[in-house]
Length: 190
Image (cartoon, rainbow, N blue to C red; front, side, top):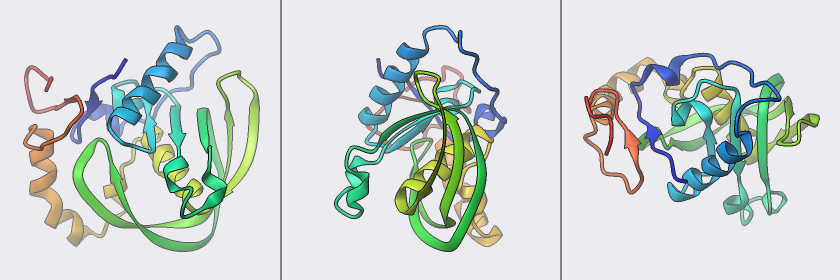
């Protein structure tokens, strides 16, 4: 089931998410719904806070970048209770967007390597190192479960220039082809 995506301005996007327990209710259904929601919105990653749940869960499917980085062919993963161990390597800029912040894309500088521990959907523990676009997508989604957004990485001047557009998004004054909930609207649905 496609779920509405929470728009910029909602407090759930600013909370540090809580760990999930192994008996989390209907986790398989939630994961399936998150993938369906992400695909329906043409995203490559989706974190639980973006659907209103303040839990440490995000999903990624970076297959669409396989032409640029062949290692990403079939790169589809589920990250539960993820913890970044280390970010390293050179910083590089890449134009990022976010399903919670539609119509805004900005160059964001991130380190090119991330080491992360996480559980998969079968509760197997992994500790892996990713680089390139995989690392960037993981860092972006990880930021969501830490209560951070890609706009936080922009310069103060750039953030000031985007303020009106961001305020418009929170009020639902944006055109998207997927369901969203806007914090400044009483009904909260679109």
